[in-house]
Length: 223
Image (cartoon, rainbow, N blue to C red; front, side):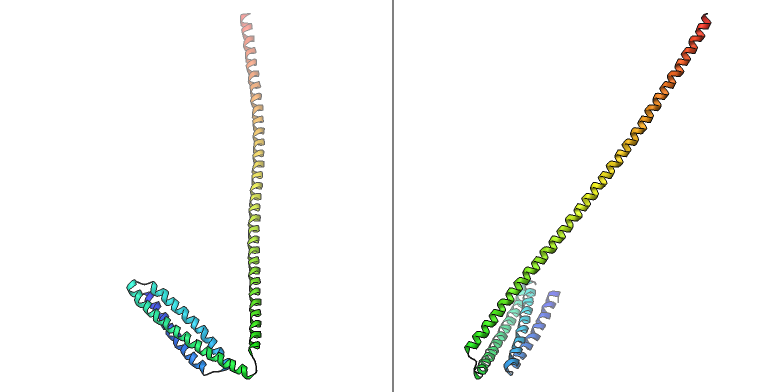
């Protein structure tokens, strides 16, 4: 059996256990009355939601296998959906019975429709206030998120500015270094020019001295 079939079988076992548990709780709730009955039926509501989610998972797995196998699994899913629909109907009947018992108890206490309307209005106002509070909370969370994004963007800009400043300072230091090198090179060239001039003067002096000596020698020989 491949992984998909194994996973489908696992979901199938989970649903069967959940279905059995739901049926047992509904039958148990029928034996209760008043608040205990309503609590048990509310608990069954949660179980039915879980069972519905399990069926959805089985349906997804059934669609992910080969067509010939998928058809068999989808037929099983249909059976489980029909079973869940039956459980929902049983729950609805049990809840209707609970409502009738509740209305009868209210009648015995002398509570009429005006009280129910008032209670419903109060519940509606509470729900409306809760919805407004949730909206305000959502807006607050959105504002916090925008503030955090703005702070992050500001931090990024400051980091970029700091990096640019460091680049500018580094460039300025490089230019100063280049200026220093140019000044040193200029001094070296000036010194070399002076030495070349001194060498030329010395060479011209030596040549002049030699020429003067040759002239004197020639003069005495001719004389």
